Length: 168
Image 1 (cartoon, rainbow, N blue to C red):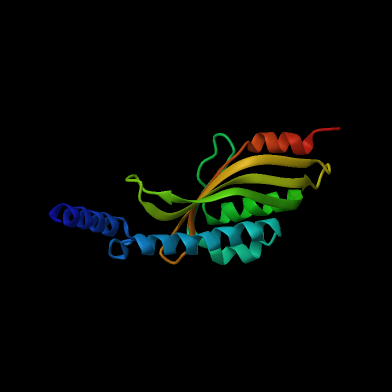
Image 2 (cartoon, rainbow, N blue to C red; image 1 turned 90 degrees about the vertical axis):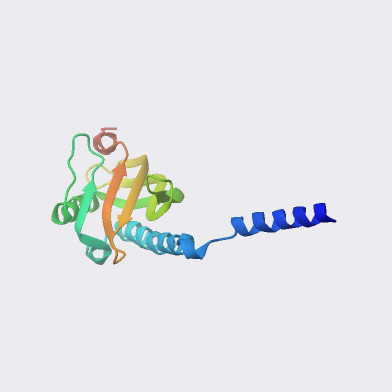
């Protein structure tokens, strides 16, 4: 009888230790990620529809963007918007097909509201009509107002340009 009581008590302790702990902020962090995920998806939707103006409220004025071009430095708000517009002006039929959306984590492995995505971009060069395809990884960090504060893009940008300008 005592042995069964101890086993039941141990099982209860185990179950409670695995339950979602909202007092530690776990639930709040998941909600933050879900909220930021909506913003990241909206950002890509607006990029694909080439609506640079509608993207502006999603972006923090202090944003830092890390471009996929080798040797590029982090750019700030105005340069980031100009670069986005340049992509939009040079490509049509822009489509991002995500493979996954995942939460980011801090140095201790705890979810921090960051959004990461892996997927494939396709677009048609305005200059040549060439259709480009490239796999990519992107991350977004957010400020306290839910705006995009930092963006990192990882893909073969030079290859995209070569593919776009190749002669057939």
